[in-house]
Image (cartoon, rainbow, N blue to C red; front, side):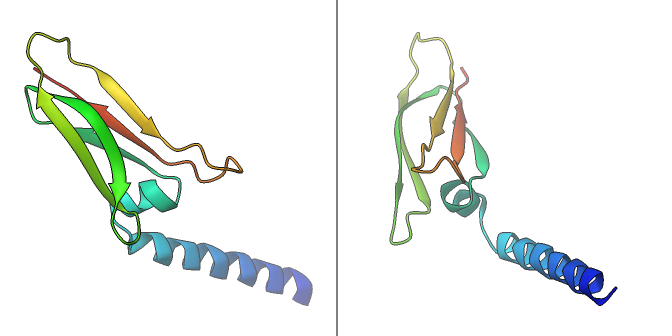
Length: 97
């Protein structure tokens, strides 16, 4: 009985710790470090050229845009391919005219 109670308490503590850790993160940090996803709607009339993570912790998302001109708006995915396949983050960029 004690063993089941201890196991249940460990699960509750682990889940609580994970929730507290992710609540203090920005959407950028979750996508960059915890395998989360983020959607960026580009300003109307702009198209994506490039995107990268910058900053001391690598959690600042920078992206380069240009005038969309006559191009058809696209939806693009900037995705991580980590070494072990765990915690792969992604950012979806949505263009519009």
